[in-house]
Length: 436
Image 1: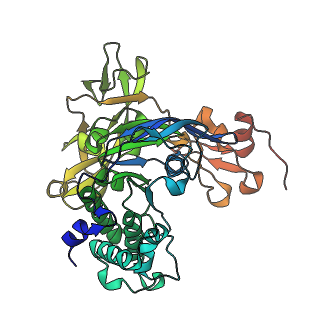
Image 2 (image 1 turned 45 degrees about the vertical axis):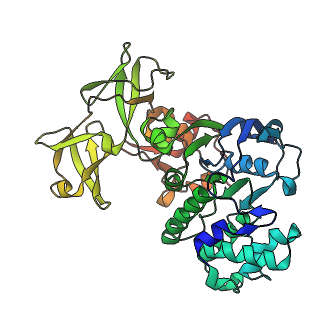
């Protein structure tokens, strides 16, 4: 059987859907969901066109999987609605929503071979045995597993199992396909192959697809549009290139791709000065007052040239193929990454003096982050009780149990003095607790 045969083969009650005919419009309308005091979704609204693939991207706990489960019918929103083709399906049971879902954990039936796994949904719809096997075989051929039809899940690789799960989801010809991080358990090469195959099949069948992932490369390479979520809210939804080149917020800018933060001075005329260059501000509506700010610039958005007594020193080089990412320590103890063509980066050995500057293009500004050491991430406990803590007025964020600080002293980065542990607790207003 060929792929074309699989695509065009007769299905129950008609013909198998072809490109552009299988999708339905989907609207997530002001969805909110709380679990106790935790607000998983906070007014999420998205409109999906028929046949569109939209990826929800964000860190763990941002609410993307909760949104997917509400669409599937596995969770109920506290407020808001899910509309498919203009019809509110919020009260429709999951089994009646005409949606296919592919899980991260495959969820294949271990007692069924690949052919029977794919045909399971058709069996539940009372499709005859011969027709069911025919359609299941065509779908396995479509995903490149015709030769593995009689094999059981334990005889298949992870990538093969996920392709069986995809074929099973497509067997019922769903109006909407839901993908819950389906590639995260696979190795890099298989993940790349499978995401290309999923995208090809989705475009061929025209199935409206909602894809949840925390992998930005997957989202940017597969989706028509990507929605970036944070703390239950949609920060921005846009085409991948728009999201990368024109992020709406500092969170989106730093979550999608690599971003440098540079200290700068914002002027009242909405220009900003950084690295002795004055350039326009991209996000004019940002809630940032004139004064000290941070400028956000991609590694490919910085200019760098070798010059004696420049404003930076090369510290690292990371070969990435045609591009090499060069780490530069600037004056003021600021580290940036600059992308250079690998052929040009040969001359940029660590220790080379360089000059880094901004091109005359609009840049994104954000409120100044006084130190990268107190950006909300928990810091690891150092050997013998030493711990990285922020400088001066921010030492209070370094609270740890006394038993984890047995040496009784904490070392501050940047060549500062060693700070007594009790001073750290006192400065942060945290009472020093007794031993346990």
